[in-house]
Amino acid sequence: MPRGLMMIGVIALTAWGCGSATARGPTLRSAGEHAGRWIGAAVQAGLLTSDSDYAGTLAREFDYLTAENEMKWGPIHPEPDTWNFAPADAIVEFAEAHSMRVKGHNLVWHMQLPGYVNTEMTADELRATMEEHIRMVVGRYRGRIVAWDVVNEPIAENGRGLRASLFLDKLGPGYIADALRWAHDADPDALLFINEYGADGLNAKSNTLFDLVEDLLHEGVPISGVGFQMHLGYVFGRPPATVRQNLERFAALGLLVNISEMDVQIKNLPGDLEARLAAQAVTYHDIVADCVAVPACHAVTFWGFTDKSSWIDSFFGDDDPLLFDASYKPKPAYFGVLDALQGR
Ligand code: G3I
Image 1 (tube, rainbow, N blue to C red):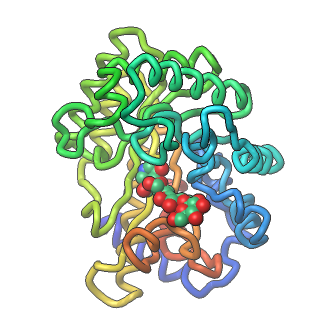
Image 2 (cartoon, protein in one colour):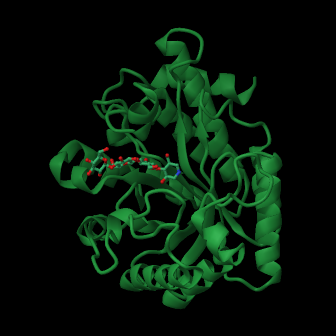
């Protein structure tokens, strides 16, 4: 029986409607620990204190946190001499209190930049500002943040070369190596990643990304690996069939790989809600199984965990893209992930 169909059978027996099905059995984090994979979620600092179900579910099920917004350049460094560390600190402290790791997200991205980082800067000003930003943020959390998405989404939409951005335009392609070197200098023990979307399977974008990291490695630039975001569903399309081959080719360079921002939109899938949730569960299962099959794939991070709170709703309209419903009940997708972590 194809693994997807077999899994739906398992889901039918164990999931949806079983209430606290997770209370007694394995959790995602215990299954992940057994499989040697970190199980991550993007989190919002405010919800850690305002929603006890949010905090409780997170602490029970995950062991690797990513700040959804709080460590991005604009939020954490809104003015040249103003640093807003409190929300990021809250995430790190929550993680430490619950024996979780933290991934910092992100240091250099063309979005969510503060107003003072703009086209009026000279190249020297931008380079100096970027260096100061990276050294300050990475240095502050040295030894407490295990990994950083150093450069986020550097590849052009169409996969032909690097993305046109303030950084590329002013500094040239060397900004990527500079960012990685400064981050490494600020915390030599941190894992350093490039993080990209739409490069999940074998395609033009992942080919360009592959060439980029191969060049960085040849130049001796400190890069630990690549994160593949895996935003799936009607906006970014069906899950590619070549995810595993893609992970394997990056791993063959000696790099770590990870699934870094997974969510699966279901609004425009065919069928009733039950069928769409079942299809979503298959997608979650198969992608996590791809990670489990590749030894270098050390972590899976979901971009949130409850349908109560997802960027998808505000950007694309109501959907149910995550592992728990809005009442924190585990969905079929949750059991799909659990099965994949357990090798089923
Ligand atoms: O915090 C401000 C608030 O003060 C203000 O009143 C409000 C008004 O719009 O905006 C709030 O900021 C929003 C922020 O999320 C926090 O909620 C921004 O407008 C909104 O643009 C921002 O969206 C984030 C988005 O990145 C920005 O591009 C999403 O939450 C976040 O999930 C999303 O995450 C990205 C990853 O970093 C990189 N990969 C893609 C992924 C999804 O787009």
